[in-house]
Amino acid sequence: MSSLFIPALLTGIFCYLGAIESPWLLGMSGGYYIVGRPLVAGLLIGLAFGDIQAGVLCGLAVQGVFIANLNTGGATNSEIVYASYGGIGLAMATTKDPAIAVTLAILIGQTFGLIFYNGRMALYSFWNTRAEKAAHENDTHGITLNHLVYPQITTFILRAVPVFLAIYFGKGLVDWLIHSIPEEVTHIIQVLGGVLPALGIALLMSIVIKNKTHFIFFFAGFVLLAFAKLSMIAIVFIAALVAYMYYFASINKGNGGDGNTATQSSAVNTADEYEDDDLF
Amino acid sequence: MDAKQTDKLLTKHDLNRLWYRWGFTHLSSMSYEKLQGHAWAYSYIPFAKKFYKDDPEKQRRLLERHSMFYNTEPQTGQLINGIVASLEEQIALGNDVSEEMPVNIKATLMGPLAGIGDSIIQGIIVPILLSIAMSLAAGGSALGPIFYIVAYGILGPSISYFAFHSGYKLGVSAIDTIVGENSKRITDAFNILGVMVVGALSAKTIVLETIAKIPLGGKTQNLQVVLDNIFPGILPLGMVLLGWWLVSSKQISATKVILIMTAIITVGSLIGFF
Image 1 (tube, rainbow over the protein chains, first blue to last red):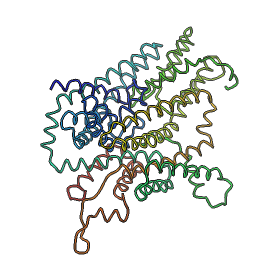
Image 2 (image 1 turned 180 degrees about the vertical axis):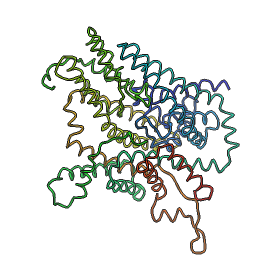
Image 3 (image 1 turned 135 degrees about the vertical axis):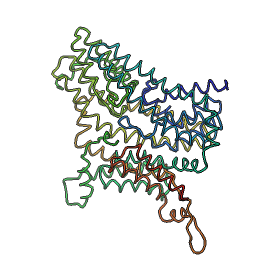
Image 4 (image 1 turned 30 degrees about the vertical axis):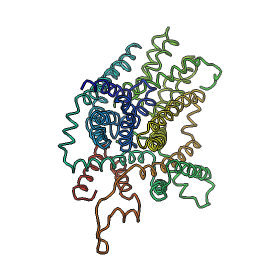
């Protein structure tokens, strides 16, 4: 069991470094958006456990479920970082089976992960109040302590410790899960894993789709992949062309009478603000 | 307010310090109450010590006005940090810029920049880089994740850095670039790009197939094969449209949508449909 100590510890530390609130790798840029992605987590955990190939395979499987993970206004559809490091880490400590990694990641991301995340978000009002008081009192040292030092110590405890403990002591739990969960439930979790990206995409849609005419573009993108089987890169270039033409069509509004009234009305309607805080 | 363009107070070092102090710690103390609010006060500590060391009252007001609720996409949102840096510079110089101005700028711009930034970064850049990385990682190759680390590792910080410095250079005139008439057309066009990519993404990433069999001319056939001939990906499309309808029209929270989807999948699995 002691051979598990270092890999479990490293996985816990990675889970802290990939957290959305972690500052060490240029904030979100290197933390949440790089270390926090399941595919990268797979590589890092693979390095920690000395089996890169198995790690990347687990990361690849989990990444498929969480590809459209979204965090807007502090609210998130699943806690991708706990899911990645808890799920892939536990799988690597036991069977190294990607299907187990996916099942565990979904369970952790949608339950423990969200509870820990939302709990911490509520808890940090405590540090905020102290940081605000420090600003009132002109205490720059107090701002540093209550914005950076104390919250980071708290977040390290909330991220690294539970993930370390889960991996170090979790073998029994995983064995129990594999043997006692009925086949129907495993099947449901697997199907659910395929469907979960739909929520992230739905949240994205509610940001980018500002009126009903935008659905034409949405279906066009869908059809180019589902029917025409084009790659994502090809579709990005086609979409760029369409966007460019849309830009030109909207310049001519006001000249009138040349039959592009649909474009005109949609261009007017999109004057709505890009608010994203009313999504949840 | 833009009269004394020649008066510059901030050195390159001061500016970069504002950039990276925010860049590293923007979400360090995030809560639902304040989100990125206190990162502003933290990023202005060296500024305060340098320019207001003889005037504690002004320093206090600076720290207080940068302790308010704030939330935007933190990489593209550096544009606002750049604009505010140019305003705070004028205030520190004693020029005719009111102290409410930075506060108003932050409140006005954080919404639009969050919208455009989230759809570009979380909606376009990250999923596309990940889908390329995932195809490179097939078979367990480390090349996939390494590609993603390098690609986003260059792109993310570059966006952040250029956003900050162009915000500072343009100053308040950047606001026209963000909320002006022409920029509305540009962001609308980017939005169209985003909508199409999101449409493609939903066809690529959602996996839902039925295992039901239907009787067809004496023998049974997989319903999925029949569906694929009519409309490939109709089940994923149905699921994402349901999700959009629940989130957008019914204003249902993400957690409840997960529960609803879980219920549908559970029932569907139990009756042998999925």
